Image 1 (cartoon, rainbow, N blue to C red):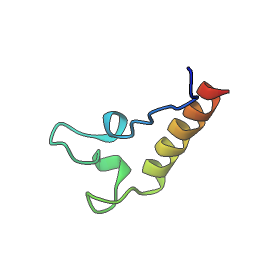
Image 2 (image 1 turned 90 degrees about the vertical axis):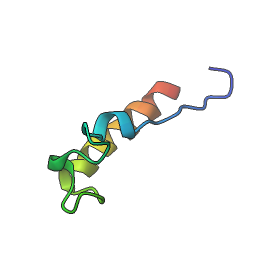
Image 3 (image 1 turned 30 degrees about the vertical axis):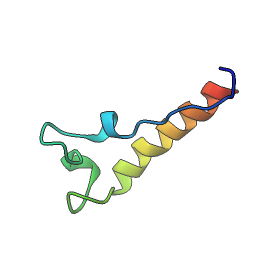
Length: 52
């Protein structure tokens, strides 16, 4: 990894078959809820440790 840049892809882990947020990860179909942010947080942690 030459420049220590990681592309963080939330989409693939959080999208349903209708290309919207998975129902369990949102309260209104658009914005993440607590579960959605928990998934996002884990993805961020994984990306940070990937570049170290």
